Structures are given as C-alpha cells and as structure tokens.
Length: 36
Image 1: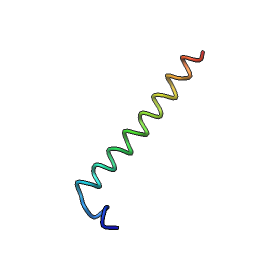
Image 2: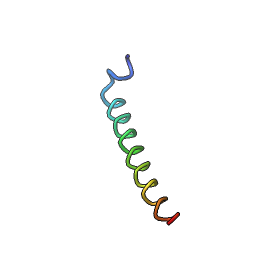
Image 3: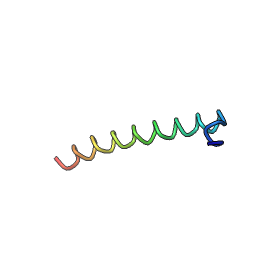
Image 4: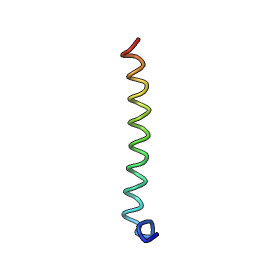
C-alpha cells in the first residue's frame, strides 16, 4: 500500500480515525443524556 508508506498521510489517517472515534463516543454519551 503506497498510501500507508507516506508518513504524513499515515499520521493524518491515524488522527482522523482517533478523532472520529472520540466524536462517536462523545455523541453517544451526549445523545443518551439528551434522550433521558
């Protein structure tokens, strides 16, 4: 995979993945409290 051999792009993908997971967790917790 040539995309993952490019360090800046791989770093961006890791940051995007971590950001997406954190956003999903926060939205899940906040959504639960909004419904309650």
